Length: 372
Image (cartoon, rainbow, N blue to C red; front, side, top):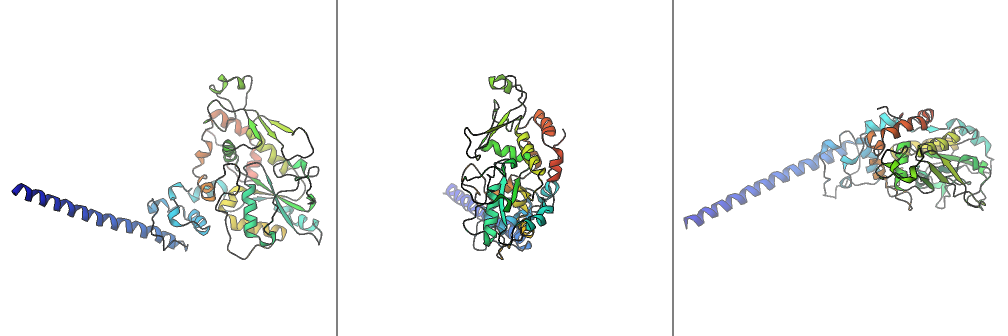
């Protein structure tokens, strides 16, 4: 009997300890929740008062990410849907891309406004390389500019992925009746290393000599392991070809050849940099981090009227094809700068330092290729 009594007392003590531990855990959880919601309240942001779920991170994970949180929450994300550990630090964004939008070509806005007739409606149309953010820009305009309407045709009339030299000679779609002279092209550009990494996910009309191990992507220079494969025999670079699929009335499809993906990026945007007609070049990063201000700049340029409703981001995937990211995932990809170099070798980076035009990087306020 004594042994049974001792066991009973031991069980009671264990139950009491468990109860006290649960109370302490509850207090810690409530304190954590209060800290998270207090942090959001201090930003003057909406948060899910009716949603009792708590995100799995400590408050300190969010302390240097207030601006990113503001973008996501104002875009419609609930606090419980956000993992601050995955978000970039705002200071890193400012250091790499500046604290506001960079739009190249604003000095041509007046010439564009003067060039269109009184009966013509100003037209923003989108152009850019694959994976450069053309669909994201189209979504931004469609969501926030009422006068574009629900049937907004967002592509430039010569084919949005084509080099600029096709502006006067190509119609895409073939029966397009849009006068290219009435269009203000908005050319999307993306930081070249992140653009090349996106091409590894889905390359569309671009092909290059693939590495022996696909973790070496994007590949610019074959390493010793790659050179074991016959496809690299006699090749100094991962040679690349671009199919111009939007060129009409031409059989077979024309193909352009480059020595690397980096050269594709440089050639496309250098050609745009050399034109003498009105156009704008907009960074994809500014859609993510400076959407409202970017829209104001575009409106002021061509005389559009933005909707008076609160600015809206396209939170879901901007395109249905390919393997595109939603808005939150796209933001998270702009974490520490070293991530964009993952998969590249020292030889790749040394080659990129030459292949990526440094003056173009400076024009778009992109970081210079790092030295190691």
